[in-house]
Amino acid sequence: MPLGPAPYFHEIAYGPDDGAAHWTTTSDGIRLRVGHWPLADAKGTVLIFPGRTEFVEKYGQIATGLAARGLASAAIDWRGQGLAQRLLDNPLVGHVEHFSDYQKDVAAMMRTARDLELPRPYFLLAHSMGGAIGLRAVMEGLAVRAVVFSGPMWGIRLAPHVKPAAWFLSHAMPRVGRGHSLPPGTRLEHHVLTDGFEDNLLTRDPRQFEIMQEQLIAHPELSLGGPSFIWLREALLETRHLMGRPSPNLPCITFLGSNERIVDLPAIHTRMSAWNGGHLEIVPEGEHEVLMEGDAVTAPLFAQMAQLFLRDSRS
Image (cartoon, rainbow, N blue to C red):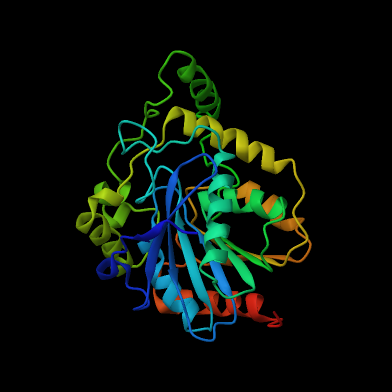
């Protein structure tokens, strides 16, 4: 069973009124937070896998959009971020020992969903780093009926001259005791608080960017800065591993902004071109957070999600 109620910050979530959160633990003893937004007579539950640096409350608005289409939802704070247990002495450094550890978090979330009796069937919405975690999970039999990816991290976008240095440093620095340090060009501050709207890589909507900032200002304990060298090493190895595996036989839509500048575009195009039953939807002028734009952009995307998830509503 879940360990009991966890904090849930209604005032910054902009989600359904009945949102709540619970503590849970993984098989290796890491405490996580799972948030959920129940819905009477829901036609199923969307499991939300957030990206790196994200947290449950960031997905409150998406939970509202899903609820309007008859779907309950749940989201997780991955190990090392949000209110989940931080893994390093400096809690602002994003870290994981092995990328496969996130699959232990997935298992804990699934156990919590069952314990809370969240309505079936289950579907998956996975964003950015959550897209890498989610891809491995569905490859390994995650019990969901369909999946939507948003700007999935199936590769990390690096300039050609930077890639060799990233591979070298991410392997060399841990060997000299610097694995918990930040790679060059990253910082301890959350990028939403240091980048201005005009230069941000996430959204074209000023209000959405303002909400992202408000959330972290109101609750700085949710903030996370750059990744450790070990996280970078593990992410590079994981994305390379995933590229060598076939896609599962599962209905899939991937949303990708035409102005995406964070994740690797060729990796997404390559996978989706070969995904049987998969569809790649390019969002014109979209940035990384295509589901966190104005209604004119997001409404058609939510309609596509609902159509995919509910095309066969038999449970």
